[in-house]
Structures are given as C-alpha cells and as structure tokens.
Image (cartoon, rainbow, N blue to C red; front, side, top):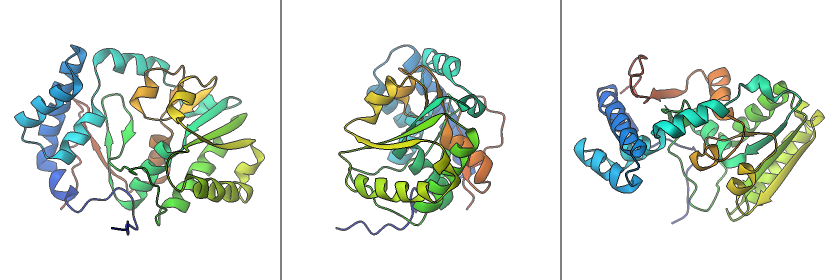
Length: 253
C-alpha cells in the first residue's frame, strides 16, 4: 500500500496514549528502565518488564525507550554536550534525518519527548524510505537559518544512502542552500552508507540525538531541540525525565 502521509510524526492515538493522566506513569517507567540499564540489564527484557508493569502500549514503550538511559551514559553525554554558541568557527556535522525528522514532527504537531539526557526526540520513523511531507521545506529552512546564525566554519550534512529518496532530498537541500543566507557558509551534503559511523569519528561538533552516536562522539549538541525551543513555540513537548518538576504537559484532548 502506498504511503499517503502528508505530515510527519502525528499518530491518531497519541492524544490518548500521552494524555496528562499517563505522564506520571511514563516518567516512573523511564526512571525504572533507566535504573535497570544502569545495572546492565538487557535492554529488551528490561523494557518488557517495565512496560508490562505499567501496561504500556507499543508506542508508549517506544517513548520510554527513547527517553531513558543509564547513569553512566547520562553523565558522559552531559560532559560532552556543548551549547549551540560553541559552534562558532568550528566544523559542524549534522545527522540529517535525525534532526530533520524531529523538527518536521514538531511542526506537524507530533509529540516531542524530552528525555533523561535532556535530548528532544520524536517517535517518527522512515522504514527505509523517506517521503517528503508538508513540513519538509519549512523544517529544512528552519535548520539552515539556525545553523547559519551559529556561524560555524563549515557544515557537513550526512544522510543515509540506503534510504530511498535520499538523493532527492539532497537535491532539495542543495537548492535551498543556494537561495538562503547559509550559502555563505561552506557546506557539503553527503549520502553515506552509515552516518552513525561517520559522525562517531567526526573531528568537529556533531548534531544528533542518536544514543549510539552520543556515546561515542567527542562533542555534540541537540540541534533539533534548540530549533524547537527557539522557533516552534507550539510544539507538543512532554518531559519524561524522572523527577522533572515541570508540569505533566500531556497531549491535550
């Protein structure tokens, strides 16, 4: 069946799954799952244990999984995290799909979760094929303009070569770059077999919230989170960090 989605990240049951009355249980699930990860329990079995305890749906379990991390990972990520202003004069490597899809989701009204490591993450996935949606060009424009304001020495955008339509996205981004102020900053758009492998060894600052990369890189920032905070005030954010004193912030019904 062809993919006819026009928006990214929104799910018809999210208003129920992530309503305010569920946020307390989801935070406890993140806390308990993180406790198990800290003690090196197998992630799959630990998530099942916690998910079964709180009778979580598959989508709620995905939110818990993406929001949790063990103590060592949390502390190491925090030590290597830099503020956006640190990008001035530096090389910036961007995990293209990771940043783009999160910003697309925020623009489309999809739920954005703020996890234990402070990263902003969505629940969207592309399943091997990227489909342009209504939010694609606005999200790319926000990303380019925000990066331009950071004044990096140069920017490398990395996209997954095996994902269908990556070539078309590269052409679209190149065209947008030529027509905006960010064209003054030297930029490369590269399709690579595995952006994770490249970014983990990147000599400058990287922009991603991919946990596997965050645990291997030298310096990173949450570019999508910074863009959402600055440019998407209507974003539907839910903070799942245990002990977060912010309001529950569930999806209103």
